[in-house]
Image 1: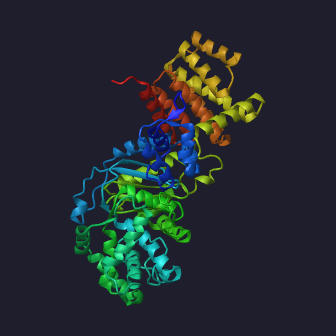
Image 2: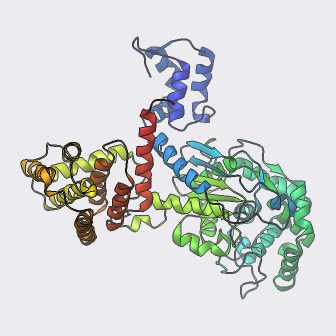
Length: 567
């Protein structure tokens, strides 16, 4: 940040802070940015810099020294973009068609926004488009009821069990309560609970209070809106929902005898609230942060209420596909038929996607695919911590990847130097993989010998020993000039060995073995198709998630592109 004369500028300071993911409007840096804005382009000495940031020194230090929850923010964002671009190619599904505003929405829209519990934010694509939140409203209306009416009274009228039935089914629990707040029957009853507590207020006023809750959750980064058009269309097509309401009234009875039509207006109005993916991502981060909004510092909901809300989202948030979603993704989430998916990664971040095309369950096709691809690459699944050190080498963005790799390599080098059997096994398998990559075309050339010895030195922390050099030279003199079929047999034997050894290899060993092969494959500045196939085979043999390899390849391609001269 400092130049040769030990000065900097306000724009340089702001740029460095922005690289950490922190927005210039962050409440924790309001004084710092206020002072910077007054300085314009004037040079700032180190002493002046210290004076500028002194009142918010701790936060500035965290931002500038990669001490936020995701330290390698720029790398993380680049990885997320590669997933985002991949998912964009999915053209499956169809818009909801039961009301015109949903049917006519642009099905090509695709947006993703993220916010961490430290307030780091990113956005890609169509993240500023207002859309009705539909069923995304349901768990937060439930949270509002818990806060206002208490747990006991709320659960007298609404259950907490997964239904396994379509969201608009008329089925009830044996005691005549709705299964949970995320099916229509439960959301309607929850709306009745809230409405019954305010007998003097109309549905519009009550909806306004729930909109205030949403505004607090998203840090008021934009106005929460209401769509009268959606509300009227919802009402015109609500025959099944009115049937559910009458069934609730007849079988269970409505809370405090609330007027059925007022209850329905509150329910339909909550579905007609409009927000953007950016706003929903901050709301999700507030839930991930135990009810404290990361970008305002305000406690919006109590932690106890958030815990119950997330539990309901986990069990029933993705309609009657919630079980499959929990199995494959393992995160609390809620979808809406306008195309939104709001997802919470507890204690780390929240994110929201927007894409109108839905699957047969009513969930956004792209949104669900993004979630699957995300947990294929990162340790976000609720049960990833049961891995025993074998996650498939999925990444934990809470730790600097470069620091982790350096630590793992240092441990390997120290162990191998001192005769550790495990470290030497990893070393041997790494060398075999490097050689196998090089002889894919039937021979090993001088440049490839050099790439192996260079990779060996980088990974093992010492020059290649005499036996390895002799082995490589013998291959280069012609002993490696065998048919590709023969080389394939050798490679198949290596894959078989890796499949046997993987039972005894933890993530550190597996990743170093794949890293060794990867470095050789990309040493000439390009990863050939044959090399990619071999890398995938090695990853599969080691039970390394294919998504992790995709991140490595995408990262390598970004580096190559950055070094290429502009066209």
